[in-house]
Image (tube, rainbow, N blue to C red):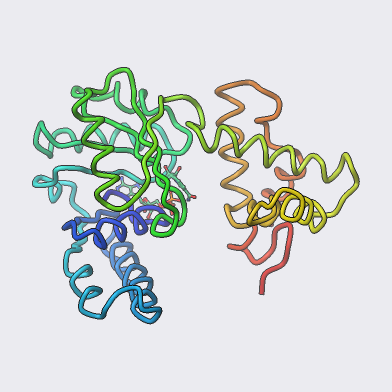
Length: 276
Ligand SMILES: NC(=O)c1ccc[n+]([C@@H]2O[C@H](COP(=O)([O-])OP(=O)(O)OC[C@H]3O[C@@H](n4cnc5c(N)ncnc54)[C@H](O)[C@@H]3O)[C@@H](O)[C@H]2O)c1
């Protein structure tokens, strides 16, 4: 696992719970320690809630090592990348990984909005590169979009799908199109919900009530944007707008202003709603 932030730590936890020895790399030892502590915390909660035994937790944690050195991936059969959403950073990293791992090893990116093809095409062995798009929080949400590029070998792609099944997740097969499946649907839909606030003169509470009580959504759109992070949503909207030029993809000005003001949702304590 390269990158041990929100997604990387979550994906590492998924692998450990499936009994897969995992090496995690971030840029400093402290970030590795922080990810290990987070995984420990969530596994401990699993023990408290009776989802696993204390021995199973210790067994899972015992499979995890952290490093700052890409060379420590030499024996890995699969490397999943979840570093910053920046094409040049990811391309540089895939170039480094390609030189370290065996020719048979798969390289996967967890990118949400960058073209997997552009990452694959930048290295000498693009046939082993796939998108493996987990959702946040990775240990909780079952879906993984397994993204195929035109350069990907059938064997590599099917191995990636089999891996996702092996770690207990629900894969779907899809092509390398902007937003893949979920974000292509969800982002313009959430943007529409925000535009309705002003158009119909309703409150965030009432838009959320409309969608939870009128269509049985498990969470309202404003609460969902607060959970995703207003900045993350705006960034993803901009990427889809850049790629597709459809007006519904562009972030509504209200969200851009919220991002500028630091009203990012749950993580800053205030977004559409306030959080203690
Ligand atoms: N957060 C989400 O909801 C979500 C959901 C699905 C996919 N994604 C995608 O997952 C990726 C990671 O997102 P995140 O939210 O976990 O980000 P994050 O900022 O929480 O974590 C990124 C981590 O990568 C590390 N990093 C940066 N460069 C590195 C390098 N060269 N080697 C090793 N580590 C490096 C950083 O130190 C940081 O710990 C992005 O591509 C994002 O689009 C995010």
